[in-house]
Length: 144
Image (cartoon, rainbow, N blue to C red; front, side, top):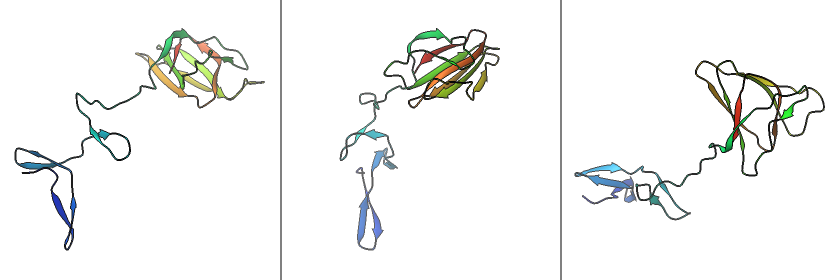
C-alpha cells in the first residue's frame, strides 16, 4: 500500500493526506516535523527537534542576599538571562518584589517558603528585576 492516500473531499474532488504504511495498515502521519516555510523535516534520532533550554541555569548557584526594607537587588543579571530560579530548602523563606526600578520605599512583595524536600520557584523577569526584602535560612538562586 502506498503512503499518502487521497480521500474524497466533495463529489469529484479529493484531498491527499499524510499517512505511513506500517504492515499494510495506514496510520495518519501526525509526526512532529520542523523546517522553514514550505518544507518539513520529520523528527528522528538523526534529525532531533531543535530546541533551546531557556530554563537551564546561567552561571553558578549563589546565595540570595539578606535583603533590606526597600529591597536589595538579587544580583547583576547576565545579558542572556530571562529570569531567576530560586532554590529553597525546607524552612527557607524569601520575601521579594519584582519591579522595573529600585524601590524608593517598601515595595509590595511576594513571600515563598520551602517545603519538606525543598522547593524550586521560577520567575521570568520581562525587563524587570527582583529586589529581596528579607530571607530566612540559606536560599540560593541561579539565573535562567
